[in-house]
Amino acid sequence: MPPPADAFEPDIDSLLAKLATTPPSLPPPLSDHAEQAAKRSKLFALSFLWNSSTLVLLVALAVGLVSSLKPTLFLTIPHVGFVPWMLSGHPLPPDQDGTPLQAQYFHTYVVDDELPQ
Image (cartoon, rainbow, N blue to C red; front, top):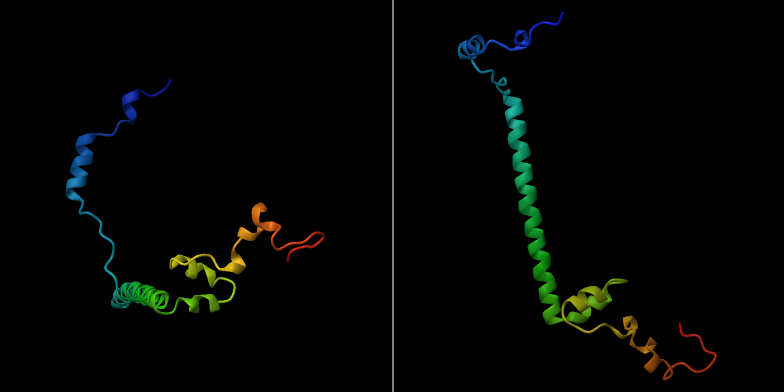
């Protein structure tokens, strides 16, 4: 025969009395070494954020100065120099432009039986 359904219900009054007499359990306090390590890690994180934001600011200023004073310096960067060149508002460089490959211009620089490179 199964036990009655109310046999598994806890006595609320005894639980409340137990909670009222039991102090809350707090984590043990950190040792001096652990507190210093926590402060160092916070300081490291803050200094990293500060240094990285300063670096981003300096790079942005350098790119802005180069794009306004001598934007042709961007084209000296190998393989990707055309990207900052175009981002600073200049047209696509001729060696990266696909206009000559369009059908209306193709016959002007390619003769019959020639492969463009």
